[in-house]
Image 1 (tube, helix red, strand yellow):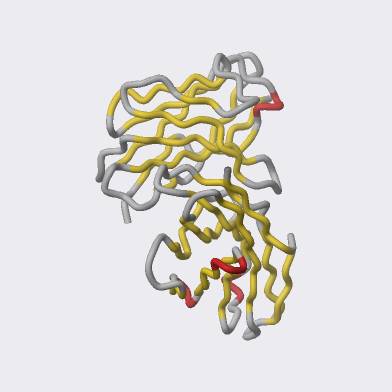
Image 2: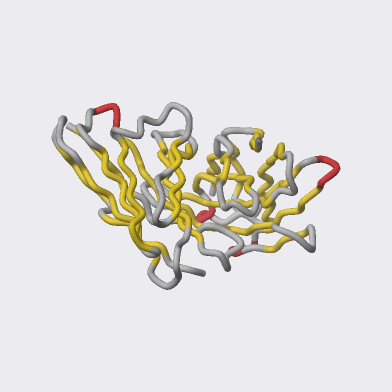
Length: 115
Length: 112
């Protein structure tokens, strides 16, 4: 299957700082990327959908000014958690799909801890 | 709108016994159905998927699932559990827009 790489796998940051997470499709062009959040012992919840070259579409209840998503190329999307607080600590997972795919492929996830 | 219900948040089986994880879905369009496995602090690994065609789908590690439209179900089975099957399992429903709705997950423990 196609490979999606997410970086970093773990990050610890201080409260009030910003953190950027990258999601790259390594061997295909990802026209659409998704960002999910998973709290401990819970399921994945879709945060936003991004299409290359256009603004992301956020799910209800997700603050777009706090979770900045950029999908500037067909192989890279970034999620920036701005002014992070402890309640933003979570596991963030991206997925990516291209026109020829029947499914989206998941990255390895990023464990964010805000202290 | 699409949604998934996984019956049973925790399943415990003996090594060598049948594994059965239940998943029911709701979808207003023909569904794409997926089963993923997640090990602690790791991403999702696709076990199998149904998009179209044969309703009995075989996946990796000996898992299989059957799409039953009349029952809106997509239950996951494995004839003989192995210790390495202990993990979290997620059923998901989507369509051709690649967006997925996940069930709450089922934790599988395997007893020696």
